[in-house]
Length: 416
Image (cartoon, rainbow, N blue to C red; front, side):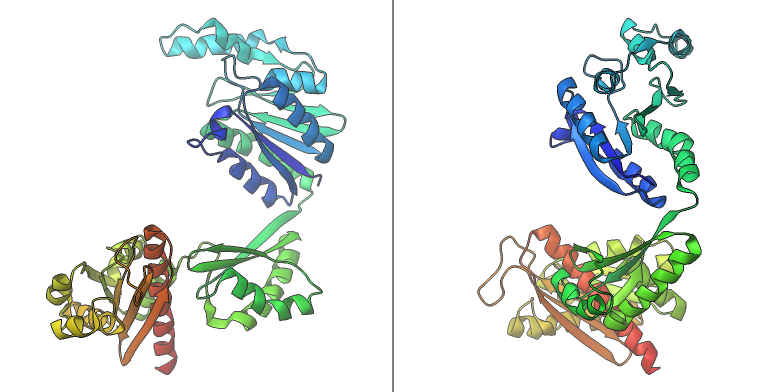
């Protein structure tokens, strides 16, 4: 397959409010047919800039896909820019004009004259009907290259990708597709994952992997192009080698989340969970209940934001708070065991810390969080020091709590 380029058109996407999500949908479709994407661009509503980008993109790509700029207003310049860039002429298609008039009339409206611009087409090229909107798309062939022109309205674009571009790519690819396997790792930084992968790189002659990092999780993306059977064999072997390196640090695959993995583990074993949260303010419970069916294992939780709440809601001994402070290993243990006892669950999780931006001290700076898990014959603790924004400290803390619970549950299963 030839390489591809994408141009998203619209000045609004160059500002701080509107995000270009259309390119992501196009990229996903291209990848599913193993089409290498070599360039993405966002171009404002400037005909000159758009002409230049079209010409530049076609120098390095055999497929160009544009989205946006097909509306009826003066700043919708995609048709005109393409005509200039490719040396083509535009022509009014009266059949499209009639469809537009009928569409407006069906809604009891009179069509503005400016909408007739949407009936301008490229003679001799393929015009793509748009069943969900007023702007047709186009499939143009120019100097052996294919140019696909789509509207920018997301639902219209999605329909046209499914109706036109997807089938064309399937036919053009000759059965070749790209397959992806994502391994998700907890408890390591991106650089830590890279360091541990050195033996893998050495065995495979420096073969590179895609490594993506987010707070509390790192993803390793394995891809293979070809037939499904061929790609599955290649990916399975590479996955086996990676699992030998990371072991139980790999918590899930593809669309898995820590909360879904923990939920499946507890559900399979008929075990239950309760949580006591301080600095995370209910985020852990929210994430757990994001999983459908979580009521079968999650019995409830408490937001113990003050010392008094910790004492009243989770049964924390006031003496522990006086002696060690609310942000301490001892209080985290008491939260976990106390909430477990209150709800009568298999597992209890306690979190206490300083999310910031204020409240830190030299001994306990912002980002200091204590997490504890209490279970059958188990009491584990993890301290983190992760100075960041308040939102990220809270998120990272829940990631660490879920991972610690996962590891405790796995270890308990092995012992039993």
